[in-house]
Length: 267
Ligand SMILES: [Ca+2]
Image (cartoon, rainbow, N blue to C red; front, top):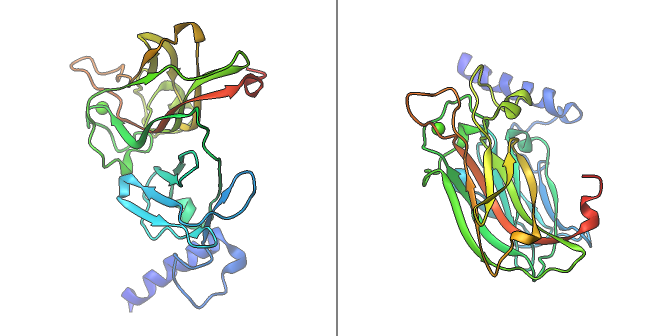
């Protein structure tokens, strides 16, 4: 009897906690059709068919149907990166966790601009593959680190006087900096790492201290050349003196964009 009742009890709690209005349901299925996610065009708000949805850490891919809807039939244990790709649109990435199974996503994606330079659509794991399970969102890290730096070259983008040129990082997870710990992005009690750093042509232009989506770094125009190099280096555990322990992080969806300056008003 126990074996029958325990799973039922768990599911009842699940519904009570997350969607009290929908407790009355004979169907015990956490991937119920009520949990439909949707992809729409950001400007027109129209649903987008056959957009590719993927979660690289979980090796999961699905597509939207004719109504722009999709389900996530996958177990999500910790924060991970979800990608949306559709021809003619900017690649979109988002940090998700298992809350998406109860709270459907409605994501508006933007048409791509001919001036965007997409440098990576993958999830890039930087570090040394040594990390604590208390790290910021490491639970679902499955991809192997290829060292502690990401380097990519790009040609000079076209931009006008009124535009800024930015490095846009769609998603960052796993940073275990002091600020990330203070923001309760990880569960590490004492130690922390130095921030990740962003360099253009060898000059440091930013430190990345917090995990999140849509991180934008302005590139000073005077350092932009015909051929440029973006380098991102992950930080180091500042409390490990016996050997170098690089902070294991994941970066997704990196591109160079131009943006009208007023977007940065107030910064
Ligand atoms: Ca490490």
